[in-house]
Amino acid sequence: MKINPSIRFLFLLSLSLPFLTMSNARASNIYIIQTDRAYQKHVVNSTVPVVAIYYSETCPHCQNYESEIETASDRYSDSELTFVKINTAYISTGARSDHVPETQLIQNNRRVYDHIGEMRSRDLVNAISDTLSISPTP
Image 1: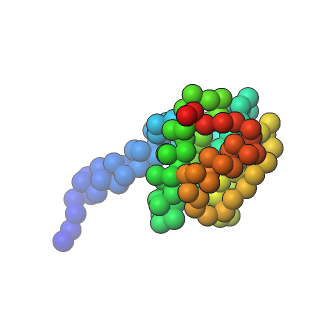
Image 2: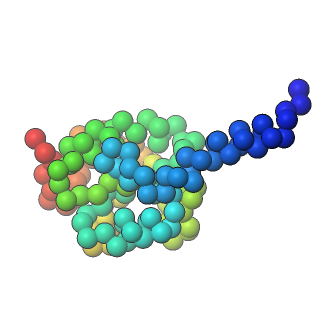
C-alpha cells in the first residue's frame, strides 16, 4: 500500500511535536528536560537540590519507574526540591548518562548520590531524606 507523501509528512510531524514542545514542560511537578539549555537552567544553575532521572523513552525499565518517580515527587510537592527527567536522546554528551534509568541527587551542581536502575518510591524518598536532609510532606 502506497501512502500519500503529504499524509506521511503530517504523520511524522505529529510524532515529533511532543518533543519539539516539551523542552521545559512539567509533568506534575517534574520538569522534562530535552535540551541542553533546559538542562543548564534546571540542573546546573539550580539554586535548590535536584533529583535528576536519566531516561530513554524506549527503555521498559524507565517506563516501569515512571509511577515510582511520580509518587516520590508528590511527597515533595511543597519543598525546595526540583525533580527533572532527562531524556538522554536529546542531551549532549556532557549531560548524558550511559545507564538508564539512572537517578542522581545533585546539590550545588555536585552529584551527591547515584543509583542505576529502578527504585521503589519509598527508597527514593529515603535517599532524598538521608542524603539531602529534606523531609517529605506528610
